[in-house]
Amino acid sequence: MWVSRLGVALVAVALLAACGAPDNRPYDDADVLFATEMIPHHRQAVAMAKLAPAHGASRPVQEVASQISAEQVPEIVQLQGMLAEWGQSGPTTGPTTGPMAGMHGMGDGAGMADAAPGMMTDDEMTRLDAATGPAFDHAFLQMMITHHRGALTMAKAELADGRDPDATLMAQNISDAQQASIELMQRLLAGK
Image (cartoon, rainbow, N blue to C red; front, side, top):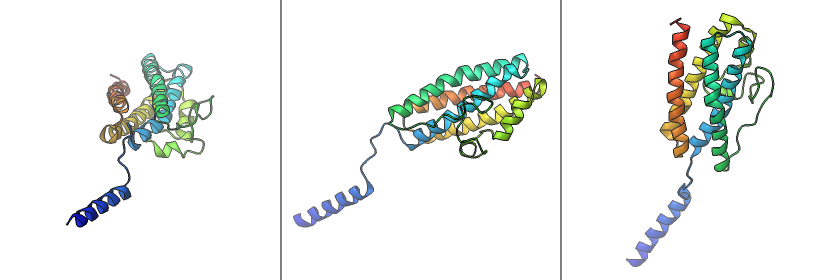
């Protein structure tokens, strides 16, 4: 009987070993995906926001753009820090000038534009860069609402599947801020 118990124990140990060791990392794949997708997503939002002053955006749209930059630039730094802490490489930086500044994988309308929800394509960014005045306001608000909805999708996935408490807290903060921003931009589009 002792031999059969030993045999059962050995089989159990072998099965556990075959399944792999328990994952004791303080983060998981959902955290890494959230950070690596949110960095270029935020970079694109900041690039869009930087267009507002030079394209004759109205004062309310310039204020929205300024708020986006103020919130998202520090979040990019925080996300990069998380990836470094986890020993993960972050996305590389794309062009440093023009409407596509700070974006990677956007040169052909593929890459992150297909991977991260709400990302604008090169064509959409070019159209935004060509617009001025009220046409810019309208295009910016519509595109940024779509962009923010993409961030809400990513934040929701992080909240459902993420493990790192700092990453999940950031996801909640992003969700709260961008939902409020969407509501403001919808009112601006409606002329209220």
